[in-house]
Image (cartoon, rainbow, N blue to C red; front, side):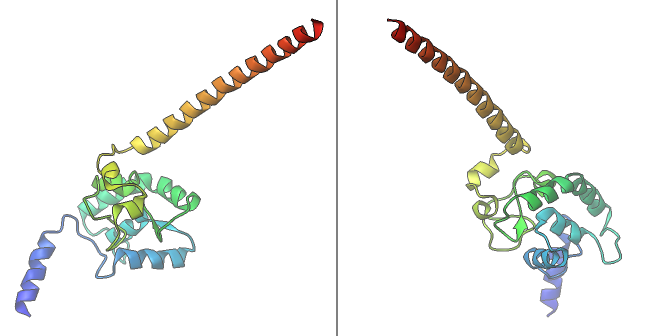
Length: 177
């Protein structure tokens, strides 16, 4: 028993960020939050809940700094959770607040969701796409793609109008002859 206690003490000193999450998994915490709130939750909300103690104080100063960074992008994450079809109980995407604060996910792990979740299941894309992703590039890439498609549609509409005009002139010339 003493060896286990000593091991637990050593493991707690290795924590990069203290948390008040206890032994409850983030997946279970997320499900409970979803039931309580009556809406899908994003993993930013789940992680944020582990940085707060029951009395509302932050676990430590580093936890407060991380929570402030997460809170900057939380409304965007909540909007994503409300508008997107969420395949998991907790919404996760590579460019959410947790991805921005903690950085790129390590192989085989997705923060804030719980165990046994692979990157492709959580994010819907292969691991190599996520690991080489530039933070913020997903929104920029999709926005740029939409702009390119809109330009392409405009060009096609102009060509179609020109084709129709040419066809009308050809038909008129054919009728006169």
